[in-house]
Each structure stands twice: as C-alpha cells, then as structure tokens.
Length: 220
Image 1 (cartoon, rainbow, N blue to C red):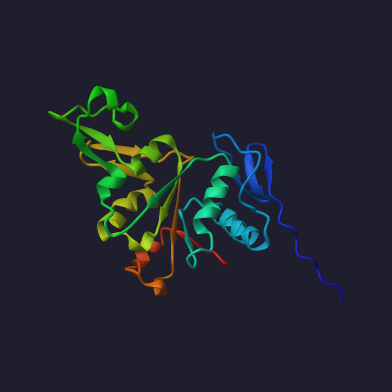
Image 2: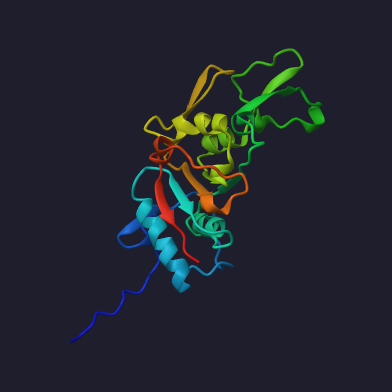
C-alpha cells in the first residue's frame, strides 16, 4: 500500500503577497532583508509558521501560547521581517498602565528635545503640558504589527482598554482627545503568553476576551 509523502512547506513571495499557497498575507511597505538570521524552514518552525499563516486568513487578532523559550516572539518577529512589516513589541506586566499604550499629557519638553511625531497634531497644549502618543497609538497611526507579550500578566484595566482594537470596531478611542483612531488594514495584533500553569502572576483570561482571538499553539 502506498503512503503519501508529507507536502513540503514552501514559502514564496508572489504578486505582493507572502506565505504558503493558499495561505498568503499582503506584503508590507518595509524593506525585506536578503538574509534571514531565523530559519523558517526548520521542521517545527515551519509547522508553527504554517499555523500562524492559516490563522491570519481571518481578520481576528492571533494569540500564541506555548512554553517559555519555544520561540513565540521570534516567530512573529521573523514573519514580520520577511513579509515587510514593522513589528512593535509591547511587554505587558501587572505594572503596565493603559496610558503606556494609549498616551498621556506630559510636560512640554525643551525645543531641542521635542519630538513632533509623538504628538497628536490636533491636540492643543494645556499650559505646560502636551499630549504624547503611547506605543500602541503610534503603531496604529503607522499601520504596524503589534505583539502584546505576556498577555496574561496584564491588568484588567489594560485588557478592557484593548477591547475596541480587538473586536469588530477595530479602533481606539482616546477620551482625553475626544478622538477615535481607526486601525488601518496593515495594522495587525498578535499576542503571546505562557501557559497558566507556569505561574508567576499569570491569570486565566475571561473567555469573552479570549474569544476575540484566534488561538495558535506553538510547539517546541
């Protein structure tokens, strides 16, 4: 009796897309390196990458779960690089505040250290303070990919603040500015977490929150 050989995992760039047929994703605007330091063709890596590419066919954010050191972060970083997207990694913890992600009013700096790109143009200065975008809002404006690392260490207030980015609304409302920022098509959210059994302050996330993600298990 003949047995079918397992199909070889083949990545390709074609007509502005990248992936493994038929699971392709649009190529981003960033330059693609000719030499990758991360081997995407290794057996376990290619299996994990194939799962991610399949999950990306849906518009939902992707949650990667796996033991520490299996390469969850490296996998998404390599995929972003080879597909021309900038990846912004945000390390979450119990100390992470929602203002770290969204932004806050900060003292107006000296002109010599003033960074216009981090300031919302429509926001007037308030005395000696001016609004400065947080890391997530900056990524939304640029249309970057975002990796929320250690998701199950984040506080409840941070999780609630992320809701509108993760569901059908695909936007971020900043109360201090009275503005809503829509997530562009190139923007994509990934999250990574170690299993709950690892401890270290990790908590089980509400099912209603987890349902906003497509879950991918990353194997070692």
